[in-house]
Image 1: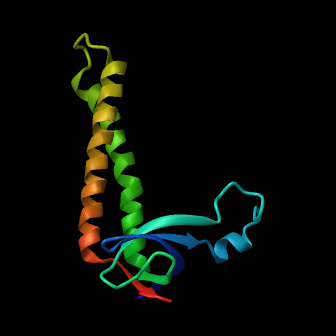
Image 2: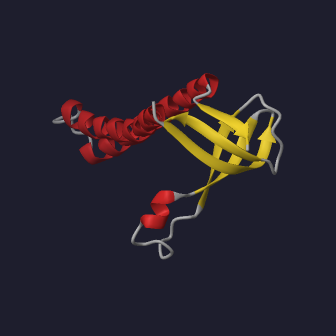
Image 3: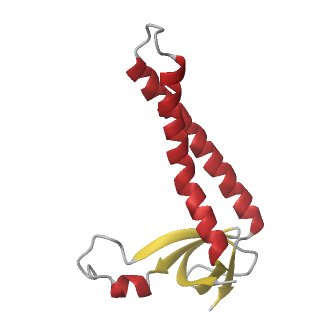
Length: 138
């Protein structure tokens, strides 16, 4: 089991919901665009803990790399797949009905995108309870 490990600075602790500023490492240093790209050197993430961690503490965040990768893939793929379904369905159901197929496609894509956001938010709630990422003070 490969571990994903990141270090970060706690920006906020709201009853166990930590906002952590994570600093990019290895991959950015070896990139050809290093120093010239628009990517931020830090990113903020939310993790959950029951430990006594305060604003300003340095923490180590660890998790199973394969589980994080699977979850990331789902978060990116679900909206794409749902929008694709939303784009295809009007062609199947509204052809030869006299309705503007382009308008129906636009509405359908919007509805399916909204459904995908609801699904992703539900997944987020589930992951919050599973404690996928473990946090400890550095």
